[in-house]
Image 1: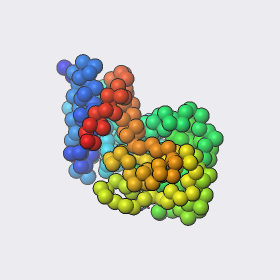
Image 2: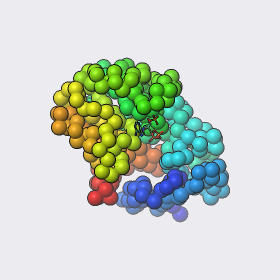
Image 3: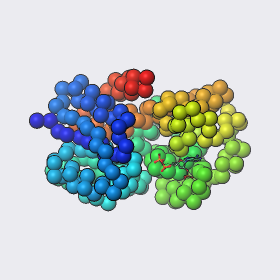
Image 4: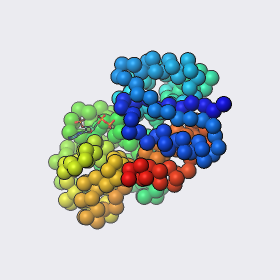
Length: 272
Ligand code: ATR
């Protein structure tokens, strides 16, 4: 009999993870199944108990449970602890360990564009929420020395800098020195709502070939990415991060490599 893997989130109706994981199970002839479950806020403790009671082999965790779930798990991997959020759980004989594959997924996707040697890059991260914490943590651990964080709420940027690394800078100051950055990363949700004209930051002053990286993958090209491209930037959307965080979870659960190309194709098909 195959294993059951679940996604806990609220809402989860539009998640592409079930399609992507179930397709990989089929391709590898693994009899496992992945199912999305809507867990109401406040019910995450019971959901974790259900993992044990039902011998669910593993789980993904998404908004709004990534932080809250941590206190109910048996072990937290070091990187997930620094990030302060869990997106993947592995159940080994009833012992639940929480991991975060978002940061590593992002890093691997970015390195595809930059190549492996980014320790001398000057990087600007916009935002200081959960996604920013994952990105800043892995980039600093990877050896990026010059990383700046700007956020609407400065205290949050300061907390992120203290916990995970990087230096805080105001939006005005960052916009005044855009030409100095090699990579600019939008981790905020600005650009996600359909037809929005809002941008997380101006693109004026960006030098050509700057890597403009947006964690958003729906839409595939946010207005900010489109404007940056017009100025000669190299654009990098969040689809690579989404696919790779999934592939990393898949590897933890099955020990097998997911097919990134097929995963990407499937997500693109779903996006239409
Ligand atoms: P996630 O887990 O996806 O990172 P989050 O923790 O809610 O989500 O963080 C959202 C980020 O987007 C924050 O940096 C937030 O800024 P604040 O810390 O000031 O709230 C940022 N953000 C969202 N909407 C924004 C807007 N309209 N203008 C500026 N920043 C915004």
